[in-house]
Image (tube, rainbow, N blue to C red; front, side, top):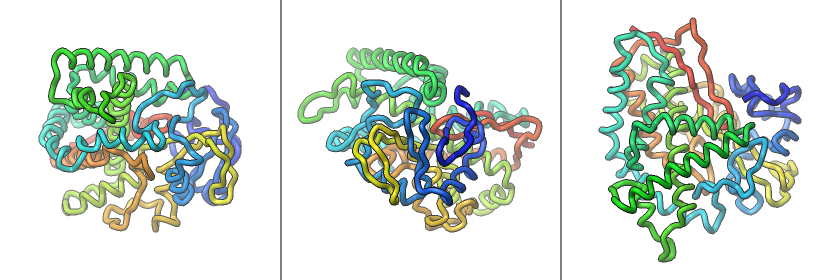
Length: 395
């Protein structure tokens, strides 16, 4: 992805594609939080970066001055913006689009996926456990949400390589290469158009069929709306969760005391998962400034984007005591890993289920493991952060 010169001053020239950000953004955010309330860069046609919980929360809740029509910071801004409702919708259109999805992501609804998720995890572990080593990102974490979301949408698991390819092209390469981005969008749209046509002939018991049968104000959803929502569900349902699973395993591989405590005290699992989500939150979203306003006393101007870093907010010591430490028994943990404001993640129940089961099943079968010192851990570039190469030794 590297097309930009190295960053010389993070307060006035930051770049979320810089290799130092990709490798370890935490000290960058810490320094910015101390030196300026909101950083600004002329890169990406102008973008702001708040790093405090207060500032991130204020922007996320302000739908008058900040629009969600563009939710990623890229070199170019496709016009019209790429529609993926409800996440790219502003009030009053946002809530009806979100309301259609909520019944499929309730606690009761996702509970029905628990058995399938455990089966997937154990099948994957069974493929490499005898080898005494694996790439936990490529061989484990990325496949779990792919197969679960495929089940929900009623699409073939065998197509998972397409899904992973499109996610990489849209979320990473597409930041700096608009041609790759638009090609991936077209390919994904064509794929879902084909799935919609199949449902017209043979309706199924799946989320694609449900969206086709849904009504808003008595009218069916447009094809653009359905395809955009399916694109969102596929990307958001896979990339973020596999990143969170991978980051959790990375932490446990390098922190044996936490790993041993979770095995000895399984009742800590719920708070541990929330702490992993806080400390290694994968998702940074964006907003477009549409009216001039101030954030924490800092003026922001229309025409700029805002990199809305929920991971940085989660490391704010004004909100979280010992914010730089992972405390698996932390109970007061109002983290922003699933976002804030009207676009708080509709799939948070599903993500928690998948992450919890992935860690539980791994620890049952591979209680002792560590990072492979002979191979590097590689992190994703862009606005979703998680390990893409995670070499692990065990046994």
